[in-house]
Amino acid sequence: MSDVLSKLNDILGERKNNADPESSYVASLHKKGLNKILEKVGEESVEVIIAAKDAERSGDNSDVIYETADLWFHSLVMLSHLGEDSGAILKELARRFDLSGLEEKENRSK
Amino acid sequence: MSDVLSKLNDILGERKNNADPESSYVASLHKKGLNKILEKVGEESVEVIIAAKDAERSGDNSDVIYETADLWFHSLVMLSHLGEDSGAILKELARRFDLSGLEEKENRSK
Amino acid sequence: MSDVLSKLNDILGERKNNADPESSYVASLHKKGLNKILEKVGEESVEVIIAAKDAERSGDNSDVIYETADLWFHSLVMLSHLGEDSGAILKELARRFDLSGLEEKENRSK
Amino acid sequence: MSDVLSKLNDILGERKNNADPESSYVASLHKKGLNKILEKVGEESVEVIIAAKDAERSGDNSDVIYETADLWFHSLVMLSHLGEDSGAILKELARRFDLSGLEEKENRSK
Image (tube, one colour):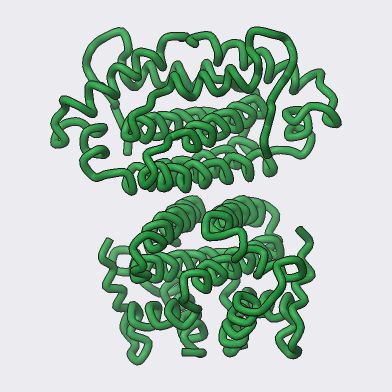
């Protein structure tokens, strides 16, 4: 699974630059612009929260997995819209946790 | 960068099961419970949205990268709290985009 | 304007109990259930935040007023779904600010 | 209760213009700026959603009332920061529901 995000970067870049907004959901989001993409990021985060509360009660995690994938996907579309990709996020997570070593070094500024 | 999420799964599992809530931020979140973790997911999604609006204006993506890493991180803590990890998200993204092939098959149900 | 919320309580109660979900948006939300209503509360809060960032830049507050009205409206539908109305919110705000007096007494617990 | 929002407008205006950020929570929010105020609006909306899910399960509405009051309060601070007050929201709600008449006329554009 380790190269899923890398392949997804390629797909998102291709959809942003070459796809038809009539047939590609990703291209249609770029055409609608940043506000629409951010509305989707916000909606999906709320759906994650609601699904997690339901999973807490039911013990069934399938919806929360589905909604978290939606949240990550739309945050990747947002990054793509701004000229970034998942590499920047993984690099920041690696820096924060010093993933060459063993210690938790969050270096959290807040 | 492809194994950052895999290494992070190991760290998050170790922090959940063995770390001291006094010294580990991750362990402290698990101790406070799901509602506190979901509040953090919500807060970080709002900070992503605000940072993206500022990036749109300034052209500087550093804050939006930092905040998106925070959002992914807290969503991973949530998944860990529910007994899942990033593998479930990558599997769902791979399924959705048929990453063995070339076509965008989102199979979106909504 | 002081009785708008009071009149709205009456309308929301009537729509909840007697209206046809086919023709009334409020009745359709109640039929879809709490999760759908909460998704709308979340969506509207994100639209408020985006509209406020745009207002900061443009100086035009019309969208942020529209979206805040949407947020308040959907939070009132949520309260109605749970058997409450705006009276409970106004009572809590009055208690918090001691609106019989002049001092700010927020008594905030967090 | 009908004049609570009107009195709160006066308090919020006074706090914005004359209060010391060291002693007034409202003045401290204005000093920190719009982004901080919007983070609070986002946080409170998430706390409303979590509290509503817990209320659905427990039947106890006290937390959801408390958190909705917090959400309305912080949205009023946001409006004050942008030079508006609750009158603009009530006017928009009255327009939308034609509160001089009996019919639900939402005139929703989306």
